[in-house]
Structures are given as structure tokens and as C-alpha cells.
Image (cartoon, rainbow over all chains, first blue to last red; front, side):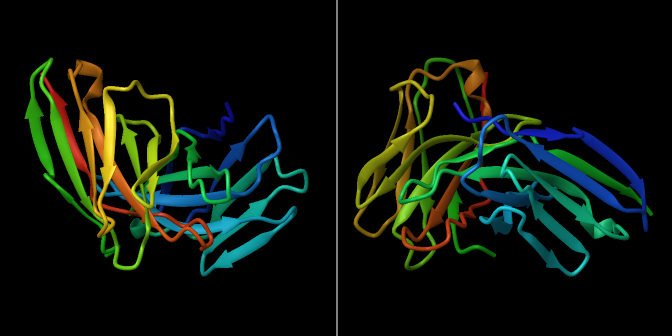
Length: 112
Length: 113
């Protein structure tokens, strides 16, 4: 079945540094969603990307969907301690079937 | 706060036992999905319910079963528990006609000894 691969698995940064996590697939993705899960918490929806080459921004977060719809990235500018958590990408097969296929996630830790 | 509530939050069972986990969907949401999240992994899709019927299933054996009730609340039942069933079980609700965003509950952490 469809798999989405995420890199890196872990990333430790100093507060104020930038952070990027990448999501890759060997096949074309119908769309991609990003979720954040704080330690001990549950996944929280951040965004959904649908169009080839789409770029969306949420304050310090920038989300991109590749032109071939086989990869996506999440970039955080000037990280803060509140950014700590695991960031997951997930493909939504769409339609009425909301089966999400999640990547393994990137755990971000931020040193104050 | 997603409005999705799950119970119990934590529970411990032994191998071979059965467990029932419960989920109350966000008001107005007609679709509920269940995910299993092992430690250090991403959530894995178990199944989805829409209009009280199973509407998609992941790679999980039949001992994983579920129900959706007319008020859109849901149950996940797991029979003949195995050690590998130890995980966080997440319920997520959504509206079938919306963008696909899932609203997750806090989860039920199951430990099988």
C-alpha cells in the first residue's frame, strides 16, 4: 500500500534556529495533511495541501507540496520552545474514506 | 479542544482478555475513525464508520471490531489481546463532506501484560 517516508526521524535545534521536515512518496499523492503531536498528546491538524506546487503559510510555518505531488515539506522559521513535538505528514485517500496513511513523524526538540 | 472524548484514558489488561474503548464524536460529525499508535510510530488506520456501518478497514485482524451508534458515538472492541496490542488508541471524528481534517481525541492508552 501507499507509504509516506519522513526524514529526519529526530531533530534537535537551539531556540531561534530554523527546522524542516520532509515527507516523500514513491507514488503520486492525492493530497497531504500535516499534524502536530505534543509529547503525551494527540495529533492536531495543521493543514491540508491538495494542488501541485502549493505553498501555504501559517505564521512561522511554511508548507509545500511538490510539483510532482510526491513530496512535501514543513519549514518552521525561528523555532520556539512551544514548537516541540512530533510532526507527521499523512496522505488522505480522499472521498468519503478518511483513511490517513501517516509517516513515522519527525520529533523536534528545542533547546531554550 | 477538539470535542472528541475517549474513555478510559488508561487501562491495563492481560493477554487473552477483551477490551472495549469508547469515543464520543464532536457534535455534528458523522464519521468516526480509529487509529492505533505504537510508541514512537505514526498512527495506523484501523477502520472507519459512517452511518453506523464500517466504511473502510486497515490491515488489522477480525478480532478488532467496532460499532457506531445513532448518536455517532463509537466503540472499539479488541478480543484475545496480545502483547503487541499495547498502544495508544485514537478516535477521530470528521464530517464526510468536508476537507478531510480529522479531529482526534486524547486517546486510550492500553497496556497488555
